[in-house]
Amino acid sequence: MKRIIIAIDGPAASGKSTTAKLLARKLGYLYLDTGAMYRACALAAKRRNIDIDDDDALKDLILNTHVLIQNTEQGNITLLDSEDVSTAIREPDISLLASAISAKAIVRTKMVELQREMGKMGGVVLDGRDIGTVVFPEAELKFFIVAPVQVRAERRFLELQEKGLSPVFEEVLEELQKRDKADSSRALAPLIPAQDAIEIDTGPLTIEGQVEELYQHYQKRMAEL
Ligand code: CDP
Image 1: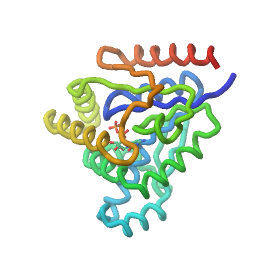
Image 2: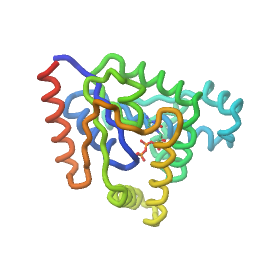
Image 3: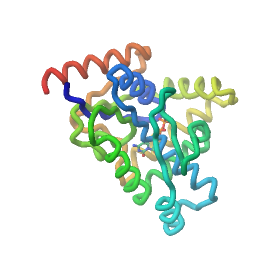
């Protein structure tokens, strides 16, 4: 059976990665979390104390940093120069820095190139902000996942609590709003639905319900191909 490219885009904490991961598992596809790659770039900049507005320093960092997503039996791990940074990149301060660094052309060019290389054979689910519009505009199936910001903030709040952190709800909400605004209004690869994306509101759905809905669209699309 043909192994296609599935693009899942949408705002922060809309349920993209959970859905993408489970859908990929169900289909026996590779899952590629592109947000993790921008998060790894942000972590690299933070660790080396680089001002991301300093173009030369940023260029030097990006050209000499190796970011890789590895699929393992336990799921995806994010490697930064061979170090597993999967946990470190989920820190709340990295989220905003990832959003800021991902607006830089040098960063996007390198990450998009890596993403295309990893996904070009098909049989892959990618999630991010610009997968259906920029990375793989030719993807056979595209989704744009949304949910009300209040619902997304509650989800992220619980996620952080489960990690043993002590988040403040208002701060989580504010961070998501800031990031949504920055991601949607930037000049390069802004967060917008591709014209042929199927919009799914995960607000009223359970995780199983989300995966099932996407799976049904997948089956319908496969019957057309
Ligand atoms: O998981 P969450 O929705 O909080 O964010 P993420 O998917 O890990 O992405 C972190 C940040 O990376 C986003 O706020 C975007 O600014 C950026 N990003 C991007 O620009 N393009 C992508 N394809 C994926 C993420």
